[in-house]
Length: 135
Image 1 (tube, rainbow, N blue to C red):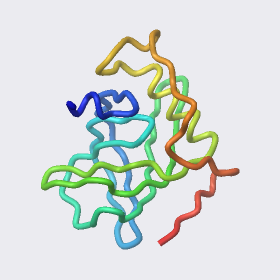
Image 2 (tube, rainbow, N blue to C red):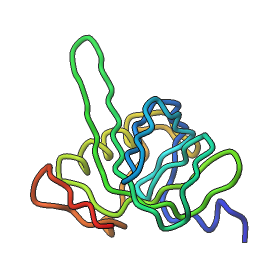
Image 3 (cartoon, rainbow, N blue to C red):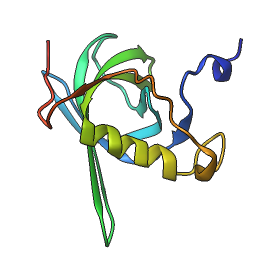
Image 4 (tube, one colour):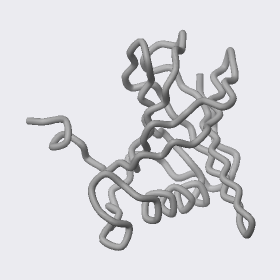
């Protein structure tokens, strides 16, 4: 089975900056390689271990709108050049922001008009913007 066949959610190339806040350190201006409904791949060397949790913040600004996405995530895989983060929880507004990113950014598999999002979410939706951070 190929890696593409194992993937549960489609992913898109998404070269944007992200802030990762671990309990011991905050990393500004990290670069996302790709993102999916399940998580994201971030380039860089990080001293943290698999299963360590962090908060994720993506901010996008344009002339007419701004989008801020916040979520809790944990490291699910790492190597010398990147970490793969799986989403653990996010607010409803965060989920909507993520869905907008996934539906309207160019992706690896198809054009935005053909995409549909699954209903079985791999994370918990929180009631408000304050996402619990459990260490």
